Image (tube, rainbow, N blue to C red; front, side, top):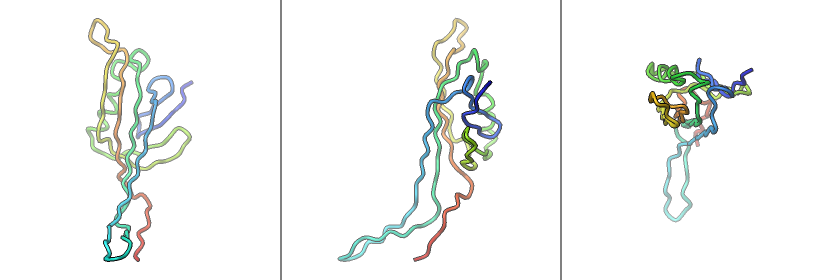
Length: 135
């Protein structure tokens, strides 16, 4: 039985075929800096937050198939936003695939890599529910 670690649209990361070893989530917030003479600098919140997720791991070509990331590359080429869920059911939002980096190792005689390391960079595209305050 396969355990789902994460799901981006129809692409699933599972414990037996497409396993990732790390997931990094970055959130940045925008502020305008207001310099004051002889007083402490103030910061005014502006815009919305930016969020990105980076998923890294490795795929075994014997278990994952000859080209285990083909579906993900096709999804990226469509340039659409996909829902991202973590294995426990948490919904992280809608994300686009900005970058896929692959690194093959343990090469067979026919040139096919036995192990494919990957890093996927995602950027959130939906409204992230940040309240805008006017001071």
